[in-house]
Structures are given as structure tokens and as C-alpha cells.
Length: 480
Image (cartoon, rainbow, N blue to C red; front, side, top):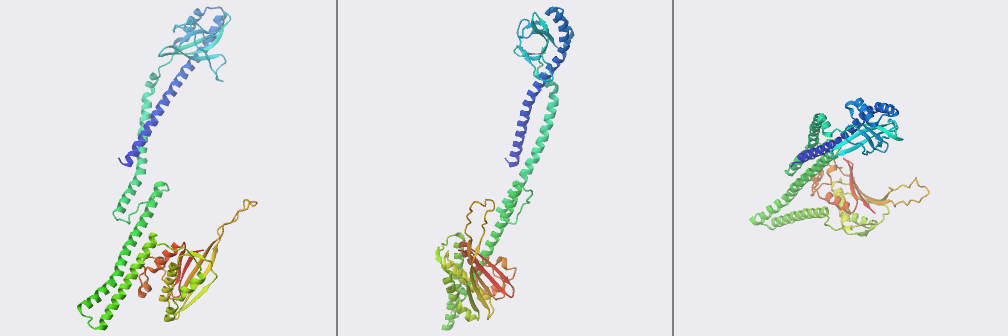
């Protein structure tokens, strides 16, 4: 059963339940209203009878004789009773209640005169007598009341009169309610159906499929979340395709060289010692290149999966950082570049010295690759503090302890090379991504991706700023 059908059936059930409760409540209300109308009619008719009864009782007319005269005046409204204040019926015109007792209930209403009574008396099962009584005088020292009584009208007779109107109103209400329920179920089910179809499209590989996000309710937010998820899936899928294509391309070149030179050795093309040594050296170099590529891929995969444990040693960068830079001074001198180190006193940090050296070495290696002859590469390191806590100004008398500020070590590697294009900056840390200058300089395009993952694993961040023709600055920020 579809969601739309379940919603529609639920609404129809609620509508029928509501109408049933309304019908039962209306039945009790109508029954009480019908009784009140009958009692009010009796009360209006008994008042003039009381005046006549008072005059007759003052002239010592017997109750039976007074009853006969009063019944002629009452007409079809009801039957006359003469009752004492104790509820004893002295005379009854139609119900056989003479010398029997009924319960007189005083009416407690501001608009009803004092001494007015009404009530209901069960004559036999299924027959209820309604009466209204008012004081008419005294007989033998007893207070006497004149009452006008009638049978309570059966409820179903009244229901027969208004039943058609009630059924018509109920039918119209039911039809309108069902139409509203259909529209409501449709408005809820249609967006969910679109989301289901979009999910199935994503499962079929149509990663560019999107749904319209309308409204700010839960369904609208769900549609926006789905679109965001689809974009992430599409981006991840595209990155996976690019990754496979890049790996295939990077492995194809050394494999081609290895295959070609090994074939030359087998065919005897490289028959002299110099040719054989050149082929062997090429095979060795290309194999080493493949080993570095595979090693970088394994390193990146382990970092991203959290399977590469990092040492948690206390590191003094005042001692380590100059040594890391010094290992590249010979290469810098060979290219005519100048390495400059500017260090402020640095606090200790906790981390993996080998992995952090790998990050710094990668940044310095890139700076040397892309710097002009005679350029300068500057490595700066300093400590900064970020204060995020503020003192309470509401309870001035109460001491509020401020948490210590977060300290960071910032390491910046600045070169005077050609710079990086603004179009390349957003993708610089992606795997295998290389700009135009990087393609010329070679490399696998994994160094910066690995550097970012290693810095993030230390709880830090790495950023880049660059300007074409003026150089670049890579900044590492590590928590103390």
C-alpha cells in the first residue's frame, strides 16, 4: 500500500471518527434542548392557570372541580395536576397519579419567578412525564401548586424531522473533508515520490539528478539535504573517476618505458655494454618512480582511513625546524636559490616529527622547483594566541574563570617563483591535480594532498596564498 493511500485512509478514518463523535454529542445536545423547549412551553402555559386556580381555591372550590375547569383552559398543551408542596398529587386529569408523590425540583434561574418548579417523572419504563408547576394558594393549611404535565417527546421523532437536514450537512461535510484529505495526502506524498524517484536515479548512476526544494518545512529541508548529498556523491564519484584515470596515466608512462627497454634487452637491440647499462638504468629509474607513486598512494589511503598511527612525541621545533631546512640547502645552492630561516622562540608541540618533516620538505621541494634562478625561499615560524573567552559583565561580584587562550605555531614557506593561477588555487590540494607549471616540473600531484592530510591529522590546517609573477606562501598552523 502506497504512502498516499495510507495517508488518505488515515484521514478518512479520522473524518468518520470525528463525525461519529459529533453525531453522538449532537444527539445528547438535541435531547436536552428538546426537553428544555417542552418545559419552557409548559411553564409559559401554567402561569395563567395559577391565577385562576388561586381564585378558585380562595372560594373553597374542591381540587377535583378546580382541575376540571383548569383542564378546559389548558387545552392541548398538557394535563393539569394539583400538587402539594410535599409532591403529593391531589388531583390528576390524565396520568392516574392521584394520591401519589412526585419530585418537585425548584428552578434555580434568575429569569424564573420564585416558587416555580419543573421536573421529570417516570410513569413507567419508556414513558417520562415532564411537568412545570407554580404556587397557587393553600388547601387545609398546605401549600398547593398547579402543574401542567405532558409526555416527553421521543427523541427519534425529533430526529426524523431534522434527520434529512443533518444527513445532508454530514454528507457535504464528508465530501469536502475527503477532498481536502486527498489534496493534503497528495501534497505530502508527491514530494516524497519525487525524492524516491531521485534516490532511484542516483542508485542507477544518474548523479546529476536533483529535486526541487520548495518550502521550509521538513519535506523542503529533506529535499535540500538530498540535493546536497547528491552533489557530494557526484563530486566523490567524479573524484574517483579522476583518481582512476590519473593513476592509470601515471602508471602507464613508467610501465611503457620499462616494457620498451626490457624488450630492447631481450631482443638484443641494446647489445653493447653502454646500451645495456642505459636500458637498465632507465628501468631502475622508472621502477623507482612507480614505487614512489604507489608509496604515496598507500600513504594517502592510510591517512584518510585512519590506519596510519602518528607518534605523539613532544617536539621542540626550535631545534628540529632548522635541521629540516638545512637538509635542502645543498639543493638550493645547486639551483642558485637562497634559503632563509626566521624563527621566533617556539613552544613545544605534540606530534610525529617524521611526518611533519615530510610536510615541510614537500613545501620546500615545491618552492625550489618553481623558483627562478637566484630566487629566495623564506621559512618563518612564530607562535600566536587566539583568545575566545570574555569576562562576564552580568555578575560582576562573581569570579568567572577564563579558559586559557589557544596557542598555535605558524610555519610559513614563501618563495619568489612564478606564482599560482587563481583558477588553480581552489584545487591545489586535490589528489593528482597539477597546474600548468606543475605539469612542466613533473611529479605525481600527491605531495600537497598528503601534506594536507598529515597537517589535519595533527589537528592543524594548511593554506596557500599566491600572486602570479610574485610567488606563493604556504602556511601551516599547528596547535600547541
